[in-house]
Image (cartoon, rainbow, N blue to C red; front, top):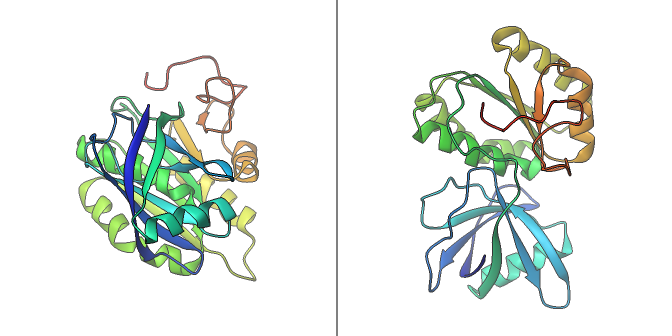
Length: 236
């Protein structure tokens, strides 16, 4: 459904990424599930999409806006002047609609962590009793800006966090392979969520076990499963 909100530009998370809050104007935030995203239609520029970093029930929405995109930069400018913005939500089928009875792995690149934050915050609020792991690569400043939020999540749940600052001299594919092997050796997560580029998803698919269920909004068939996985509901 379409929803009118007022933007608020908040802190810079790194040189390119800014936190933006969306506040209700007339109606409360529409119902959505942790992991879903929204669509913004910008006059003269077309449509752009953003993951929602807040879990349901907060009364406002948090976005992480990568201003290297012209459309994203325009949204940030509207938020700086606290302009009204019309968005459409909820979108996407890579989400949680219940509490899993098994461990989970979340892999994020850059602003893809916003989807992961919504998923993990939801699980923490639901007293998730199993192991979860987050593998995230981003700029060092972006990683540091989320230190407090991740530490708070670790106090509430059994969460492993592995972070990779993007810098010269480190091969991200080698790092990802090693961390995926580490997590699967520790917890053998049944489901893996990938939030980031298609290249990141492809790299994850190379290294996770064949029997693992992989979920990403890049999958067109319901956006719920890898083509190699049987058609199962997200929560089983």
